[in-house]
Length: 193
Image 1: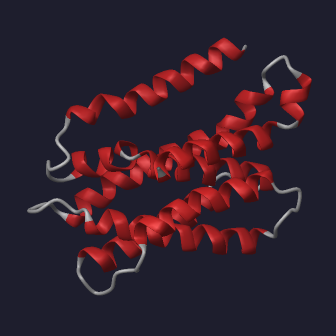
Image 2 (image 1 turned 180 degrees about the vertical axis):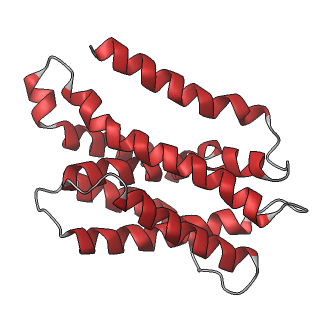
């Protein structure tokens, strides 16, 4: 059973790394598609949003919808030069660590509190995406590319706790959110260094 899921996730991730041959300075949808997986910070945050949404038992579509809305709004605002959040990279790193803590925490937050946190994190990620819009690219194409990738990463994050629960190890299964939170935070430290 675990092998079946591992193969699915491996094939899913391979789809992301195939387009890495596309130059970071290509135009349009290709650049948008590659951007969230080219940096470990964005990838970890999207997975963490998915894991947290599963832990809270939220409907599958709520967290991705809120994250994508906030991310696209802030990418538009930053790409057009209307406004840019300060400390973008710090905000992205904080989002990884904060989400890791929230995943590991025993407290259950209300969906509204959780969605507010997710929206704030999305604003930082969207600002980074908007500022890295390739020259001569269509903002709409670029946003479409990174929105699809971010959605797929969040959905993958929602599946990770299920994959871990399929292991034949009761101790790991009961603490799966702690292990996933630790893994995300440890990889976040790699990004921070």
